[in-house]
Length: 127
View 1 (spheres, rainbow, N blue to C red):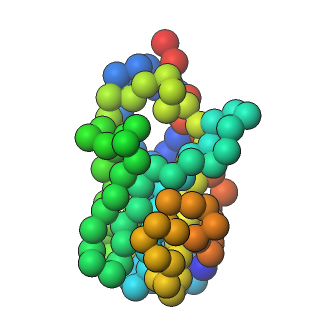
View 2: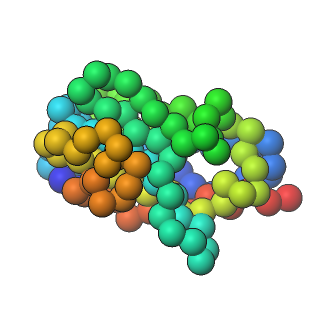
């Protein structure tokens, strides 16, 4: 599976941005798919995940209510809509998949729960 994340850029506080992650080599069905981010000098942090078994989407407390993960099976892509952006959202954002979707729920909060990663796209929130 190859993943390509794109859509990052510079945005002012309070603004919005939509990240995309295009998959090739396999369809995005029967997979857990997630977004992580890594700020300079910090560890990679869980942002959101769509869990195939159960069909639920989960968010970290820091982005809940502001970010939305979605999928488009026809385009074999997933997205992260980010609204009300804050300077602390500044980071490189990565998409990732767990295929087959065997990682237990608690394992999906950790980067080690995923098998394939995109290259990352930089989001900078600054005035």
